[in-house]
Image 1 (cartoon, rainbow, N blue to C red):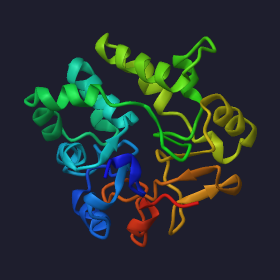
Image 2: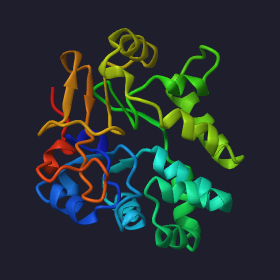
Image 3: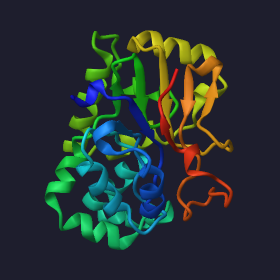
Image 4: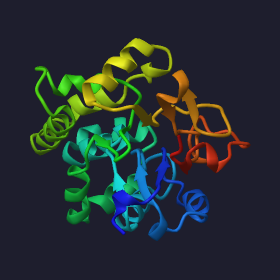
Length: 240
């Protein structure tokens, strides 16, 4: 069975906590699920590159680019950015490991920003329409255009622009009109994202489920992790 025909499992921000990721995924065999990682697999925790490799190699999976992956690629290209990157949770051993793995670097630079699923759900890293900065003209095929622009930026040293786009607030929680316009523009019925931890035991649903936040603060090394935060707040099936 093709990945697109499988039920969808969404994985929010992992931030280097590979042990909790393994625990969260244990009930969901990769052969039975189309797994979508929403980005920010790296930083804070000790196993960011390990999480990238695991997500890359897990069958029937898609991996989106998060702002922390962009910051890591920026530090890899421009060594003067290493201090900034470490200040947002970057682990120097992860950067050194990524520097030695050119195949992983190339794979990471090709990750999309947006993915529209078969049921009309749009997957992205942050809950914002800031992606429109990559599409100044209202061209047809906005998802394809935005993804192509992101790849071009990463080929040309444009990490600062991508960092700004992916690092803003999750506006969809409080601005339903912007959410509706974004869904209409992308031809989507709802959007799932991570980026900013919520406080619930399950993914947080806004505006009748048209926006869903899957960042439950999974990583025990993240500054906003709560000891009682269950893995189900970050990893779970996409249901109606």
